[in-house]
Length: 328
Image (cartoon, rainbow, N blue to C red; front, side):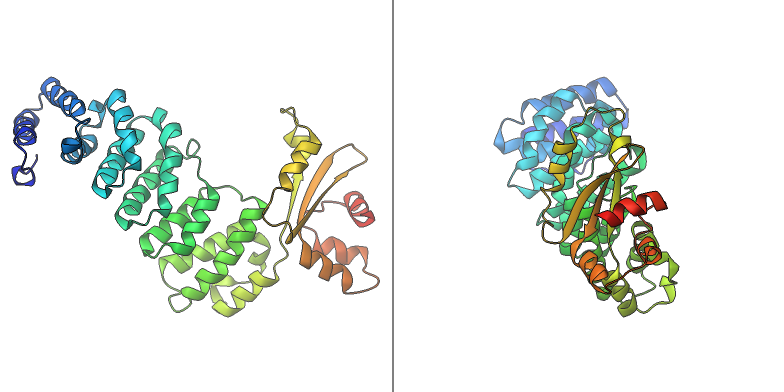
């Protein structure tokens, strides 16, 4: 039910009074009629904020009555300079996505971009809907990792930081560039929360560190001081391997074009990438931190195969692959 004192305009007040009457008796057809009337007056700037406010409450409680034509009309307000209108629109479309997954592809990426919005109220609402969407439709939700990582460095609200970390946890793996960025972000956040080891944020950070940097699991991270964990991250040799042959099995990819994508990285000075072809005609693509790779091979004039194998065990599976790797 609506509070009549929240509305001043006679036209809007009249519709709210009717809505309260119909809602109390659950008269769906008459409620739908008023929703259509509210949709029709959205073109008048005078009524956009109060109308979308009413519709946002109806979207939460009667979301099945929110039509596609209404959503299409509301979507333009997602880019409004008026924060109230923008929030109302986010709420309407957010509940529409929760009610019907067909809207996820159209609007979820827009919601992810709002994670960087300067308004905390807007970010709070977006976090709520993205969290709910991940619970219901994790596969359909296309999260832009670079935005999430960037938001981790700017977000101040603790609940939203945990939310961002949950978004990362929904990813099975991260690309090399994202791992590199996350490694540096982890160092910053762990240092920021070093005096609050029992906090949800710190615990979540350690959980994600274990997930995306599994080699560090050899150390009992929970008992380590923050400074020690940061040092472990700084010294961690980041490397990834891609089986192009497997990737290309069901796709028609051009190796040269595929490799070109690696060259578009913002980490051109930080990483090196190359590919090898095994005797079984399997193509592997490697990505490695350039400085750490250089340091490793400059440490001794003669490095044993065993030492190389141990250092690169994450990406080298057997002696045959090791020999190819060494020849490079």
